[in-house]
Length: 342
Ligand code: NAD
Image (cartoon, rainbow, N blue to C red; front, side, top):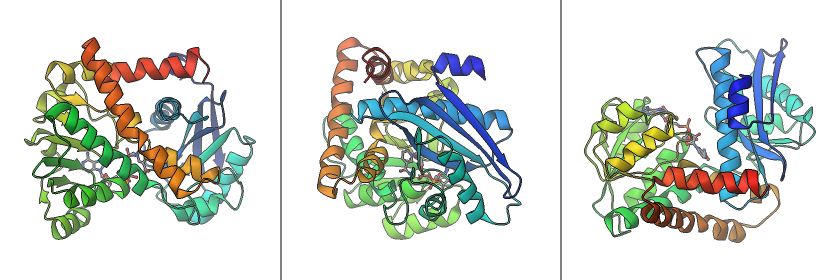
């Protein structure tokens, strides 16, 4: 774990257990040099404890990059609560997690993420004020979806020469909080939807509401389409899976889509334009950060509008330098996070 912390330049890793509630949690702080480390809290099952720590470390680094590229004075952090199938009192578990956050004295601020809800954030808020996306503050997912939608239009413009999505075939992998809201916007813009989710109820709903075509989860990645939008979990793009893609671009909300930068190079070699995840999915972070600061919706919307501009800028650099947008985004983020200390 120390080697991974060193290679990702992670500042600290915090672990806790709470026998009374069954809480087993990890908080990774990649950096809090320019501001508190803000990042979501996952509540998921992991094959082992080490995988949970690795997930938190990698995601926290992504949050630092995301905040820097979104122009927010924040560091990056992430929390993982290991899902306990036998937990008796979920509310007490999240309240205990709030005490863990409080012990870090404001260095880490939490938010909703995969497997957690605004109600869970309300339970955390009983123990700490370092929490966003409570019921009162609102779920950031619609704002993430809004940013991804605008990002898909920018990606379509860069790769296909038009940001008109009418008739475009978009494959949405995962119809959760973000994926479903994204599908709704894509449908309204006239896109043809191909969808998959492990939860057949979500797929059924998208078929009824948006006329979406269902595709088996394992088959979606190789289904011909214009844009593949990963909105499930990360690590889905590796050298093998990239070869299966039959699309012009990849643009979706999932964090850490690439297993490594070689996968990005392979996308580039295949002529598939990749929208860096921590730029296109930054709408949620922008929403929770500005909401936590007390900004109004107009300010938040104006900040969200920078997402497609930032993407377009990265695509232009990538084209000029004949590099993957993922590498360009990483260079930019590293410059901001490490060298300038922004
Ligand atoms: P969610 O848990 O609400 O939904 C994820 C959905 O994807 C689930 O319905 C799940 O069944 C499905 N899924 C997962 N892997 C799949 C696969 N391989 N094939 C088909 N379906 C699959 O999560 P969410 O809040 O919608 O977030 C989705 C992704 O976007 C996550 O990677 C998350 O980290 C990222 N993200 C979310 C936000 C946000 O505001 N919620 C912000 C930034 C990034």
